[in-house]
Length: 113
Length: 114
Image (tube, rainbow over all chains, first blue to last red; front, side, top):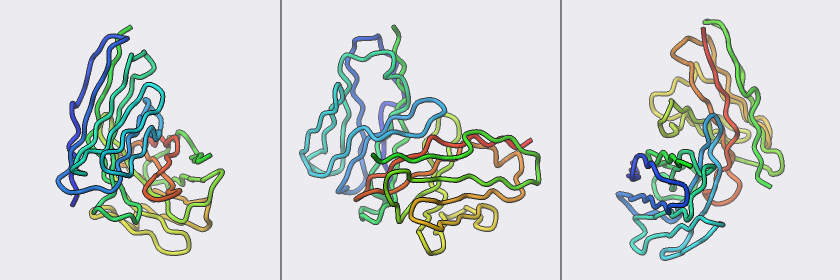
């Protein structure tokens, strides 16, 4: 099945620093989704990408859909303590649009004040 | 919009009992809902896809007789963990598909089986 490789697995940064994480797929995706999960909560959708090359921002977050359709990255600018959590990339399992998602392993972000 | 609720948020039960978890889409109709299980600091593991009005589709290795799923309406899906045992203790999360491939997640249910 579809495999998503997300990196880095974890990051420890100082408040104010920028963050970048990425996901690569073994096959082409037609959608990339980025989620954030706070401890003890469900994931929250941050950004959805639908076109190759698409660059979308949501506040301090920016995500891009890679031209090859096999990768995506998420940047967080000027990090703050509440950015702490686990970030997941996700895409349609099997490359179809019937709804099942494949998730990356997650990037655990720690922000030191 | 796109709010999904889960109830209960936390449950502790004795081994051998059954536990029902509800997942509701509050402001949209969801023909498809999904149930996930998550272990600490790990990614989400899809258990089953719940389709309104039809039987759920279970992922390989998930016992359908142990994890009963019912999707009786466009806004409600339930997961019942039958004869729960300590190894069933986990964080269970549901999601609802709103449009395209976007899934919106509930807040999760922490199940502890003693």
